[in-house]
Image (cartoon, rainbow, N blue to C red):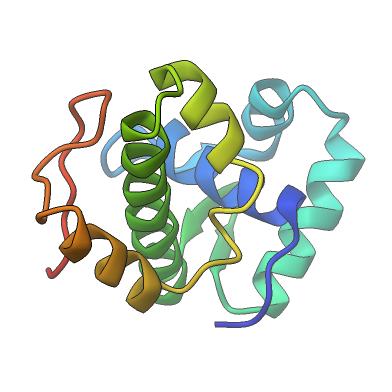
Length: 134
């Protein structure tokens, strides 16, 4: 996967988590949820499209297969590092906030090693599943 910026990461996560099952999300919905102006989202979507992480059809946006994989990787890293920081004494909210700043930079493989060292937890501090292999 190509390197992502923090804003691209946030946009990718917003697309996935704002989609309602098979229903894609609109640019305006992404802008509202990210609390940015539509031109900013338009620029982010172009960059994600160029990286092959999304597809756009009729104003609707969905993650591509590579985008889904990137989302799974970011989510795994997030939950692994959130668990580690929580175990180190941060609150769930503090751990989540800290991890959002770098979860898109760490490899899935590193997260898997950290999870293994922690005894392969099944869930993160928020109770969300930690899925290593799909």
